[in-house]
Length: 346
Image (cartoon, rainbow, N blue to C red; front, side, top):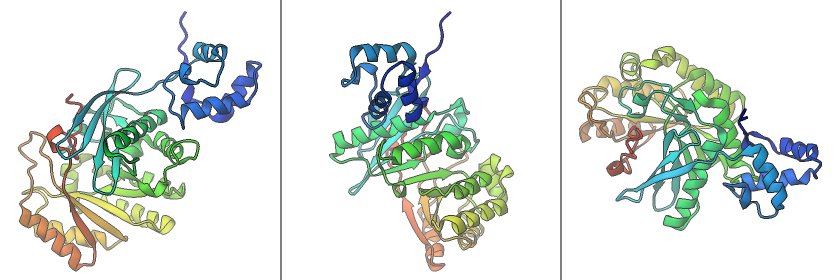
């Protein structure tokens, strides 16, 4: 009977040290293997050149490295790169490299498909197939860092968890991945350069605050009017605005970290004065800034880009209230790599 080999990257450094001792070897071999797996990003045991052939064969007999594979890479006219990332079980997720003059940002996925049901988002139509493991999230970042160095001559500077999936519905794995990304034994990135975006899972926002995370928080708000929010994001009926407000106030009390609201404006949905006034009021509860996002249609009649005048009205009202607001132009639209477009069409 065939036994399934364990993915070696589920083992801690201590586990690896103990494994080598159990095999009658020296514990420091565990440190060597751990370094190969994480900071050196080895895909195969044969890459581990400071281990004997015998040791590599022994590892091969016990374990696998479930490494991701970038299946296809699409290049946008604006320099954005979209990766179709194949996982060890054949499922595919997408991740995106977004370059600007001063930085390159990795937009990574946390689930195959999505747990949520936002009506305007192509990813939500895929439904959630499974959560990504910490190493699968980490691998996306490594791949984009390599692409950033290759195509833009500089290392990756920022990471946003805004790809496929709701990160807070895969909390433990996302936190483990971030621990490894920020660890000196991993990529050594500053947590201040990482933003986790949620659609507003209140209880998990509080948990993050209790866990004293050091990264930034973004909330996909899209409306501060309850009935509009429930219409465009039906799952938010479980996380009403007063509860979200309370969670965000709690977050700020604990972390003193300003929140970013991601906000798409649609014609005929949230482009009226009532919606603008409600957002301005909601923004006064907790120190924040607002990113107004250009909508990227996903072949749908209901959701259409708002007129430029509506965006201008939002900017004016927010700035008059002393709230920092900016319009985020979407990148990579020509390759379906922009916000809400990740749907594994490839």
